[in-house]
Length: 115
Image 1 (cartoon, rainbow, N blue to C red):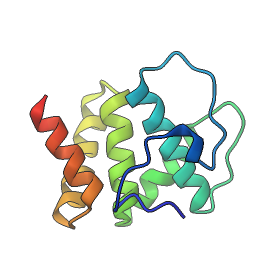
Image 2: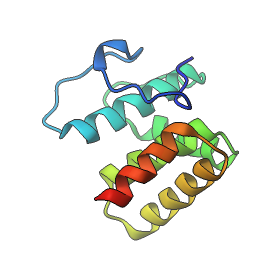
Image 3: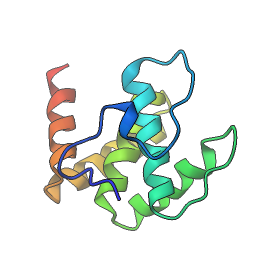
């Protein structure tokens, strides 16, 4: 399984999920690709043409305390949502992952603070 605590994967050729055609900004595209890859790696079967079940799966893992899932779900919502409730939930997950010492979450939090 991919270990997002050590270093976030930012090169599409290393993902277990097949890269897909898109018009998304790189940060958004990779947040989706990494979340789908993590969902698949944690036993969730990916469905054609929808990310919703995979997002729900990773969010459930985040709620259960999985720090990789917290980081990935937080970044997914921060880069893909303008819904205040989703963003508040994402910030909570990110803060919990940072408090747990999750290295990628710490780096991501620093990058957000620099913006």
